[in-house]
Image (tube, rainbow, N blue to C red; front, top):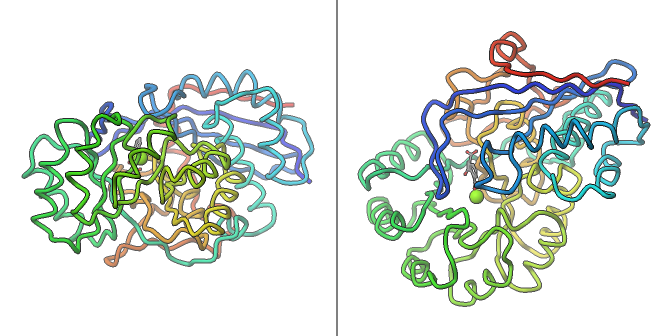
Length: 374
Ligand code: OSB
Ligand code: MG
């Protein structure tokens, strides 16, 4: 039994080591809301809201999420006695539509608390079986082909197991073909369009279809399953859905409509760990490979992603790169490190998420706080 007595929000501003450009915009500093929950016994759990500053990835933003947590989500959870973290999402589902990233930030914090309370690693509490996970690198849109090739070379040299190239209309076929030619068919390459295309652009994907890419991630609109199905029919390369998968029903729709063959699971995008694990289980039953995506998380959200990626169905390297790919200095200790073989160790011997908050660093970066208690 868990009774949540306190939910604290802290917004931090964390500068990226380099700007990150996707089809719909560029970020150079992450605005992140950290969530800390505490139960009646004083056990705490940490989480992170990954929503972007601007609604260019999904409709939520870091500001709508703050508002949703403060106004609707925290009041539902505070003072409630629940039998475990799986009870949180159902509590939040009734009559609060959407706001999945806001819900996830609280739900995932309660999972972290539950893991600490049980003296278990978060990875094992979620059902993770791996001790190391394989890591990929997501490379933002570059201003020139040469710059992109340089980035890919550096990433391969560092040991990354999968390279994702962000694309947008005007920076797609030429860039991707050049990288393919430079590194050969064996390079583990994929592209991510972040919903920048329509079905009338199908020729763009047909032109890249014989390059042997691992997948085309989210070519079409974030809420469009039917047209992804139309597009998949025209292609050999598997479509991977990211934005379109907001819950188990959408995963079922994808299979039913053959709208894609791979899923990028971001726990925050689907409303938290309970739903992420349910999607993972469904995909395993249906032989759909999954991998763990990223949202440029701090060391806290990264801990959550690493734990999830240790589940057995995560057979493709995730966007779970080490701390230094994002930050001069992370907000956790130890920082997340990748070895030369492109793997990250899952902290299975420590209760909870396996890293500690660098509270001095967090306080230096904090721009607003909100404490809610019962
Ligand atoms: O589509 O996966 C995406 C970052 C921001 C918004 C959307 C996406 C991404 C990434 C980053 O690809 C991956 C990472 O965290 O390294
Ligand atoms: Mg994506």
